[in-house]
Every structure is written in C-alpha cells, then in structure tokens.
Length: 278
Ligand code: KMH
Ligand code: ZN
Image (cartoon, rainbow, N blue to C red):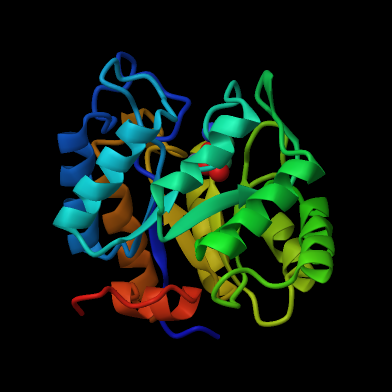
C-alpha cells in the first residue's frame, strides 16, 4: 500500500466552453492562479490542456510553451501536458505537444467512443508517443478508458521497453460515455491487469467522481480531479472552482490516512528528475 496519495488536478480539459462554464481556467493568468491554489491544497501534478486567446482548445506550440513556462515560474507542480487534446485534433499536432518539453505527458492506450464522438488512439500513435517520450526524457501517464487497454499497455512495454524513468503510472479514466463505468467493481477488475510495480490513479467523470475516488483510495490508488472531468460538486450544485475539487480529494485522502504527496515525493515516485533548484 502506498503511503501518500498523488493528487493530480486536471483544471480545464478540451470539452467545456468558457461561455458555458465561466469558472473554467482558460487564460494564462487563470491557469497560473489555479495551479497555485491547487498546489497549496495538495496537488502535485497538473494535467494541462491549453486554450488560445479565443478560449478554445489549442495545440499551438508557442501558446503551449507559454502556459508551461508560466506554471513553472509560479509553482513546482509536475507539468503533465495532454497529448489527447480534443477529439478533433490531428495526430501530428498531438505528437508535437512533446516539443514543449513537459515533465510528463498523457498517453491514451486505445480508441474509445467519447459521448457522440470518437477519441482515436490507434496502435501506431501509441507507439510513436511512447518512443518519442523515451527519447526525450518525458514521463508518460498511461490513460486507460477500458480494461482491454491494459492488455495494450503490456504489449507496448513488452515490445518497446519501459518508459523514461522506469516507472509505470496508469490513470484509469472511468465513466466516460463509451468507456468503462465509474464503479468500484470496474476499478477492482482492472487491478490484476496492471503491470508489476505499477502505480495507478483513477478519475471518475461526472457523477462517478466520488465513487471512483473512494474506490481508488481504498485500493491504494492515487487521484485525479478537476473541471476537465467534473463540473457538478453535488446534485444541483455547480463546481465553484478546481480548488474546491482538490480540497475535497485532499480531505478524503487524509481521512484514508494517505495524505497528499509532496511534489518532491511525486517526482520520485513517477521517475521524474528533481527540480534543479531544490
Ligand atoms: N480530451 C479527450 C478527448 C488526455 O488528455 O490525454 C482526451 C483526453 C485525454 O483528455
Ligand atoms: Zn485530458
């Protein structure tokens, strides 16, 4: 059983519009303020989808670099860029995100229906992301939307070797309409298929947020929360901001006697080199 809980905040995502969700952080200033607040409450990793000045999702490299630099200037959070982007993003632009030199990046392990859309992750893209991250010293977080994708992870590691840093960390993304359900049973079913020595976090989308969080904590897992995945705090109550979600997760982690992990401990667990000035 891991002693601390790695808390990741996914503050923005690519799916919600600022006009519909005014509390969504989209400007550089809003993302930085969110990063600072969530760090103070126990987050150690930030999973970033970048928005342009028009508030829409973008993979524009100068803008991605600007946001990465701004978060690094203000916090010591592990910066994990999304290579999933939006369902409409082309593969070359998703791969090019790695040029922004994040500490870590998400790597989705299979194609999945995503509401009315398709989130496309063919084998060739998975291999390209994995090997480019190995070459560039970027640590992947393997995103798993369905149990079969853990078989893809095994195949990937068997054929192409371990990720940079040597440690395998998986995020079970549960409750996506089209993926595995966000239930304790589904989470438990995934656990025997994790590679030996791997750690896992879980994310419950929408109303599955709480059951997934509680199941993950009870199984020794880590947590990802944020407005990318959850916009309703309780029935009829919109999320106020990302800090509210991080505070709830940190509180539950403390109740589970696995308090939020420091950023240094997170780096050490994930196989990311320590910050230069720490
Ligand atoms: N926005 C979703 C289509 C990731 O960040 O790697 C994909 C996603 C996964 O959010
Ligand atoms: Zn994402």
